Image 1 (cartoon, protein in one colour):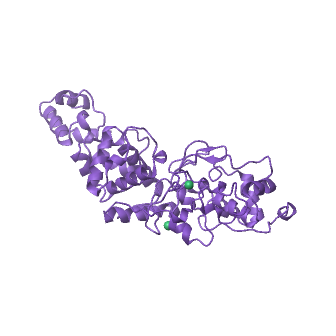
Image 2: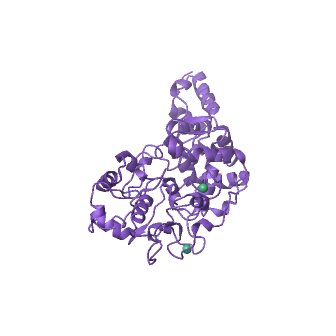
Image 3: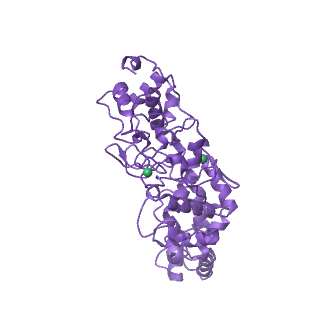
Length: 390
Ligand SMILES: [Zn+2]
Ligand SMILES: [Zn+2]
């Protein structure tokens, strides 16, 4: 292939992205489709000075790259945008973070064109079934730990040498292998389609079903857990992520992990609670267990969750700790149905105290009730003042 062949408005081989294909996967297929190694192709069509492989190109695709690909492959701008992770904005999280970590997106840890983190997962069955193997966009999602099609656990590294996936580097040092090279480990050449199959140990069919339904949320933009619908999936995902963080922490809320794990048959020791890590940086087994536990807690909402918190003595303060902006559907239940810990009396105590003061013609106020009940202050007053002016 010559530069002349690639200099026109439409490249000779103008493959379109496969359904849900990652931008990087598509570019590699385009290069190999032209019989060129990725670096050669990239230099020819994008220019020697425009290195795109020293960054997370799926997350940080510049506009010029989007337009170039649209023009030279005859794909719409929207079609190209759909191959980038930015397309999850407004679905799974509010704002895409070009610099820094984005919620639910696995970080690649790019260093000198190499991906050091386990930021891309794969399903061996999906790769084996593809006529032309390719990498899916949703395989970069941290909660996507099980293939919904084949019902097997995803893998995030080479089972033979444990290297992180770098499919764009699998062709390096190999002269003849271009097309199809991406299904080999870049480090040891292991055929990833031959990877051993693992299945989730979760035996709770309701959690199983709810998780599988949620895996679709990244595509449809709304979510549901059993009979509870969420028009904006991010309202649900915010809570799921908070619960994952809470259960993985060494704070009191971490008790939810042991309780939930015992209910669904997971070993809670899989989760390392001593190291403070964001959900996206945890290993795949930890992410799988935490997500399943979070979903289990939200089933039969809110009865199961409230009951779990009561059994392990968690107050609302323990549950919402470090949750900056909890959605109303969650916080309203937490405030209404969970005790306020040692800082607040129950509604009944509160009203009884107010009545006591009132019948003795003493001033009824929050401060006087606190004094009477022996509380120095009320952190979360869950009763309106009109309720106590009886
Ligand atoms: Zn699969
Ligand atoms: Zn390997």
